[in-house]
Length: 162
Image (cartoon, rainbow, N blue to C red; front, side):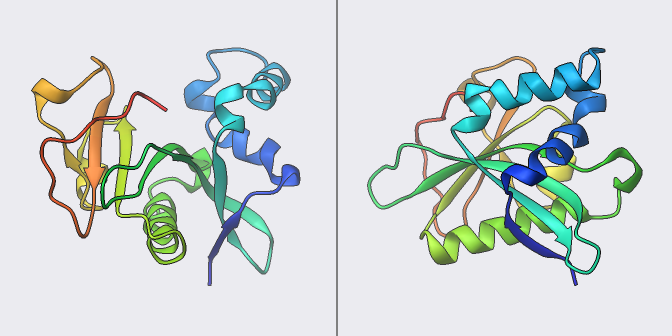
């Protein structure tokens, strides 16, 4: 059975390399890893991974950012969702997202989750994320999406890209 856990410093090279084919911008992999290690954005969040506990293989990863809370809600941003190229389209990223949300709802009383999709909406719609109205979108190439079991609030403040 696959399990989620917070990533350790020993996991980070494999975590960064999961998205290298998409975000590496044709730079050498060691240069890309150095850039990720030095990223102030990546240091602000908490990384989670989905792993096979028997083999210790890291199968999927994402980062969670604390967002400003508003009256009666605790918000988090989810980003940098990645799975190694050879393991994509097997449901690992979906499982990780769902399990992280469940853990944050249970342990941190989070009520609202945001993400910015660069891959379109279909994948995240299957996880019950909804696209915010076009008038509220802040970026041309990334769609802000929202998930909450409890709240159906409007209007609310859309967070900047994490």
